[in-house]
Image 1: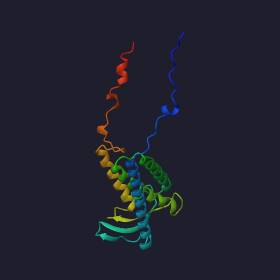
Image 2: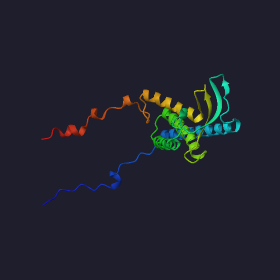
Image 3: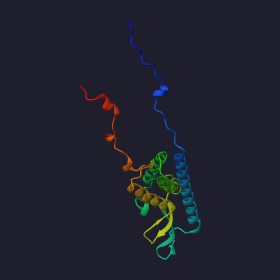
Length: 206
């Protein structure tokens, strides 16, 4: 009596899902993102070093553009506008989480706009995080060096400029529907509208 032939065994490496390595364009975008972040970090720390060496803390503002823009050295224990001044260590944790999130997201970049946005955001976040980790009064409680006075409303630094610019750019990309991978959300077809050939072949269940 003959028996039906068993299907040939399939090798494990054929059934395992293949991992797609990053394309050359993705690697270029990642490299540019990291390079921009490093540039922002260096510019932020160098300008802070200049401010500390050239200015006196809490001295009157030196005008640059009338009353609209000036330089004045202060040490900020809080966030922007000196918010949460008594919770410096909490701000340090929050910024650290943001940095980790950005680093994880960089590997999925498929858009030059997002590469610029995340590069600015990462560099700015790292710039202020370095202050909180390395400056007085202690680790994770360091005060951020601010020296750009905006008409007396608040005092910031280069890292703040990078973060605000990144936020504006991210908002514009979101309004245009451009995702992190560079695709427009309007171009993506919903999964339930795609015809399933297997469903057509099987027909209605008995």
